[in-house]
Length: 187
Image (cartoon, rainbow, N blue to C red; front, side, top):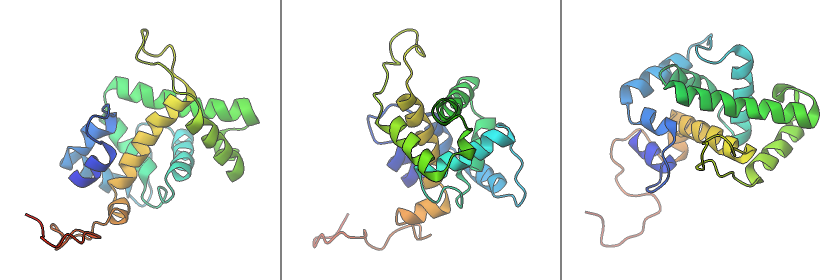
């Protein structure tokens, strides 16, 4: 799981709320176990927000539905700080507002093409200057996209499916680095 945290948190990057959670193996294990319950009931977000998050997650990282990324995020939000929770709900709400403004429909009722088009709008918009006081004064849809993407990518790549996509095989140690042809070997 430490490998997945490094993939989503490159050195020098500003910290995202999920990074703190990904360093806690007990929290991760419990959240994944609860997220994979046969009949999942959301604990932090409501049913509509969970449905919206599922659709957004699948659009941002295909395979997120099968990996139960939305449910995992919901579990992490139950142990997040109030500020992290507020920022998450605001980001999710920004996408609902984008859908209502542009298509007059909730995000979950948009056609797949409409969702794709709005994700493209959000991911290519100019980021804000949210570091300037007051902190939330210039948050753009791009900022909200990046915030949700951080949660979704972290959730997906901490799942077994995501880790396998990164090359994890279940072994604790790789016998060799995949794709490395270094003739001198590795220390």
